[in-house]
Image 1 (cartoon, rainbow, N blue to C red):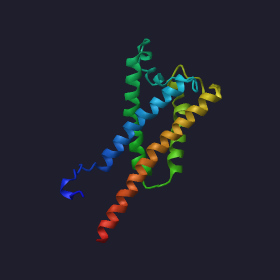
Image 2: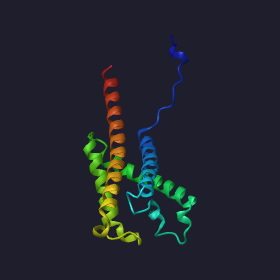
Image 3: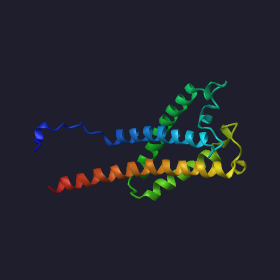
Image 4: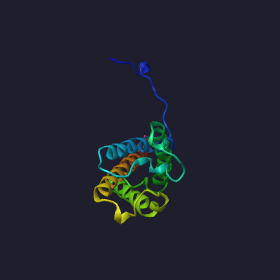
Length: 165
C-alpha cells in the first residue's frame, strides 16, 4: 500500500510551455526522420537545405551542420506549434493536424521553394521525394496538432469537472 504523502508530485507545466516543448521536440523528431528519409534515398532533398540561403561552404554537410540543422528545425517548429496553438487548438480531430501538416508541406515546397537554390521547382521534383516529404509533413502536423488539441481538451475537461465539485 502506498501512502499519498510518499508520492512525488511534479510541478505542472503551463499549456503554453507544453506547446513550446511539443513544437521543439516535434521539430527535432521529424527532422531526424527527414534525415532518415534522405539517408535511405526516399528523398533527394537533404534536410540541411534549411541552412543553404544563409551559409557558404561544405561544413553544413558535416556533423556540426547536421546538429545545427536539427536544432534549428526545433526552434522553427516552436513557431509552427504556437501558430497551431493560437488558431486551431480548439479543434479536436486528427484531420486538422493532418491538414495543417499538408498546408506546411505546400508552403515549403511551393511558396518558400525559391529561397532554396538547390531545390528544384515543385513540378520538377521527383515523385518519391514529394511523397516522402508530404508524409513526413503530414505526420509532423498530426504530431503537433493532436498533441496540442488533446492537451487543450484535457485541461478544459478538468476545469469543467473541478467547477462542478
